Structure formats: structure tokens, C-alpha cells
Length: 253
Ligand code: BV8
Ligand code: ZN
Image (cartoon, rainbow, N blue to C red; front, side, top):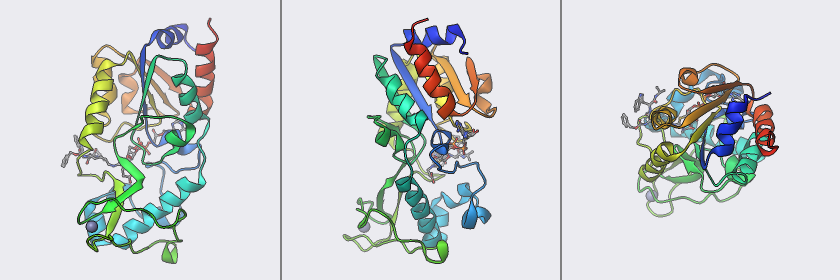
């Protein structure tokens, strides 16, 4: 089922970069960014809500959205795609997961050293003094009217708490971005999984890898802007393709 050249490239790689987007969590039941927002969130555009101005305009709406998403993640489980990435890491000398996602499903599947380019739902901080905030109870309360929920206050300065994610218009965390750039230049293979390749500067990474001589493999049911950069385009769901790909690499041809 897989191109023998693809299997050879993966078997010979010493350092594999795995670059993931919302699609890798789709089969865990987490709605992707481009999927129409579901239910109460239907009338909102995610890229508008994920911004400092939206939080300043209506912090209860934005906090309610993030708590709804955090609740979904807490109730979700890693899927076969997350688990196949852990299995792949056991077969190569060096594997780095670089994710745009703000969930912790890679970590809960067993990946470690995950580079989070866009932060995490699980690391809220104060909007005023930036000190970290610790959630009181694991499962958040249900947002009022299913939507709006006043964010808690900072114990240090009484400021309002914000999600620990990178919003549109905000800089990516310096250390994570630098790490990602180094990995993109050092890896022999970069596997891009479940991303529409439309958010910058993250979307630059597969191109940087290709420009540094790496082979780029894309796993996505749909065509994306990366199609013309990738050396191998595997059309389909990550949860279907990845376990079979990792198995095919293991069974020496
Ligand atoms: C910044 C956290 C410097 C929040 C997110 C050029 C250079 C620099 C910046 C820009 C630029 N051009 C434009 C910009 C501005 C902006 C940007 O990129 N805008 C876009 C809309 C054009 N970038 C920024 O603002 C970045 N900051 O550049 O700082 C700066 C500072 C000031 C002023 C100027 C510049 C910050 C971007 C980070 C935004 N935060 N997330 C949150 O989550 O709420 S991004 C958000 O989109 C998520 O992290 C998500 O991961 C990410 C990308 O989306 P995808 O992961 O690709 O998900 P998507 O739904 O799009 O696609 C899912 C894919 O999965 C699909 O292809 C689908 O087919 C596939 N799929 C579905 N099911 C499956 C599947 N695949 C496999 N298996 C399946 N089962
Ligand atoms: Zn504070």
C-alpha cells in the first residue's frame, strides 16, 4: 500500500520531525479549527474569538469558549494517530513532535518533549501580570447559558485569567519557535499531519525542512497548500494511515 521509496526514506531517517495540526485530534472528537464551529459556537468565527481584542471586548464569551474546548479535551482520549506517533518514536533514533494544537493528547498518548507552537489550554495565566494560574477543579463548571463564563481572578494581582494559548496577532513562544526551526533544518524527514497549512509562521516549517533537504510527507484527507511542497501526499485520516505506516516500516520489506 505504501510507496517503497517512502518506506526506505523513513527507515533510513535518523531524525524525524512530526508536525501536527487540529486534524490529528479530530478522531478524538475534538473539532478542528476549519470545521464549522458546532452547536452554540456556530455563529462565531474561531479566528476572531482567538484574539486579544475578542478577549478585551467580551472576556466571558472568550473564556466560555476556551472552557468548553478544555472540557472536550478533558473528556477525550488520544486516538490511534497519537499512539502511532509514540510507536514510531520507539523505532527511530530521534523523533520530535511539533504541534500547533493546544490540547495535551500527544502527551497523554506518551509523547514527550512536545514543542507547542501555540501554547496550551492547560496553562492559563493572568492577563495583567502573566503569572500562571492553577485551575481549582479539574472539570470546569458548565459555562452559563451554555456559552459565557466570567474568567477567574489572579490571586496575586486580582487581574483576569486568560487561556495559555497564542492568539492571532501574538508572538509565538520564542524558545519553542527556535526549537522548531532547528528541528526543521536538522531532520531528514518531516511528516505533516492534519493541518490546513494556513497559519503562519508555523506553516513555514515544512517548507524550511524541504529547503534544507528533508523529505516532506503529508497526511491529510484533503488537499492543502502543502501539496506542492510535500514529496509524498498520503490522502486519508491520520488514525487510519499512521498505524499502518508505522507497521509497514517495522516489517522490513
Ligand atoms: C504571529 C491557538 C508575529 C489559539 C492558534 C505571516 C507571518 C506571520 C504572521 C502572519 C503571516 N500572515 C498572517 C499572519 C497572522 C496570523 C495568521 O497566520 N493568520 C492566518 C489566519 C492567515 N498569524 C499570527 O497571528 C501568529 N502570530 O505571526 O506573530 C506577529 C505579531 C504581531 C503582528 C504580526 C505578526 C499566531 C498564530 C497562532 C494563532 N493561534 N491557536 C486557539 O487554539 O484557540 S492557530 C489555530 O489554527 C490552531 O492552533 C490550529 O492548530 C491552527 C492551524 O489550524 P490547523 O491545525 O491546520 O487546523 P485546521 O482546522 O485549519 O485544519 C485541520 C486540517 O486537518 C484540515 O486540513 C483537515 O483536512 C485535516 N483533517 C481533518 N480530519 C483529519 C484531518 N487530517 C488527518 N486526519 C483526520 N482525521
Ligand atoms: Zn495577575
